[in-house]
Amino acid sequence: MTGGWRGWVARLWSALLCSALVGLAPPALAKPPACPPAAQAPDAATLAQWQAQARDRGLLWRYEKDGRSGWLFGTLHVGRGPWSVPGPALSLALEQADRLVLEIDPLADDTQSALRAPTPASGPAPAALPKALAARLRRQLERACVGTLLDGLTPSMQAVTLLALSARGAGLDPAWGQEPMLSQRFHQARRPVESIETVDQQVQALVGGDELDTLRQALDELENPASMAVVNRLAEAWAAGDLATLSAYPRWCRCLDTAQQRAEFDRMVVQRNARMAAHIERLHAAGARPLVAVGALHLVGEDGLPQRLQRAGFRLTRLGPGAP
Image (cartoon, rainbow, N blue to C red; front, side, top):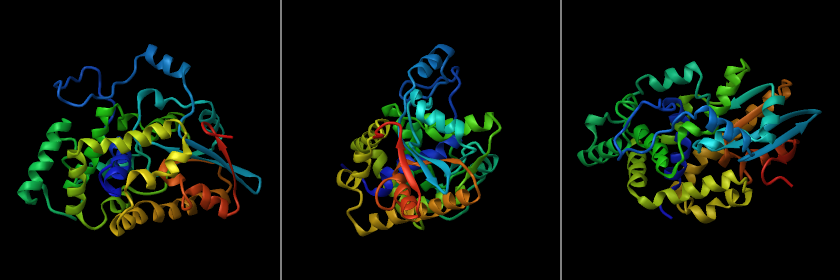
């Protein structure tokens, strides 16, 4: 498999930001045949079929301490249409939780404003890029058929957002990610939705301090036909609730082989896990019963949220697919 840690994680994680920009395409919106397929809102019959066949996917735990409970759900930031309908275990958690807690709420007004505002001049403007990089980025923007959708983003964020959109060729679309589905349900029911992070915090963790390096890595991934293999394997493992495969990703992704990759992993995942765990503990101490839904890779390994919560004295019970 090819590509570094940043590339394939960026492909999934940037989908969370992308889902706030890209909605379901209206049925009348036509694109040339060469463009990636756009997600289409299901008609009534299709939605009824999805609901009748709904089953649990992903990683789900209930955590308990001092007689109070909450739920921890590992999400996938891209998905397929039927995956947007929760199964029985997740539906029960949705019903019993008193709020939804996300990395960022893609439907929140402040998220939308932050994404649509011009990004800070932390890197070169598109017109100032080296000619070869600018040409590579332009080809990928044309290939994705995004029009002017990404014009307000820096080149590096344009490229990592294109990583998320490139999964559409494998039937995995940010429009069907778990976060938009969960957020929409809570907002429609006028129930609280909270964000652990801000858009700026996520962008800083993703890009770090090197705009051109991030841009080059993302373009390398976009130009490599083999790069989707990792994403496909991760998506199928997530859908099956296959904790063993998700936990073993360092052995098959070849993404933590260098000091740079390990440092990026620490910035993108380990440091953010600590912030997420602290947020959960504060909510629990305040008496909240949240459903905390964050990317599934934050829930695996010794630094994952379940292990962190266990070390903090919580008792965790696995629910849904893969539960004992």
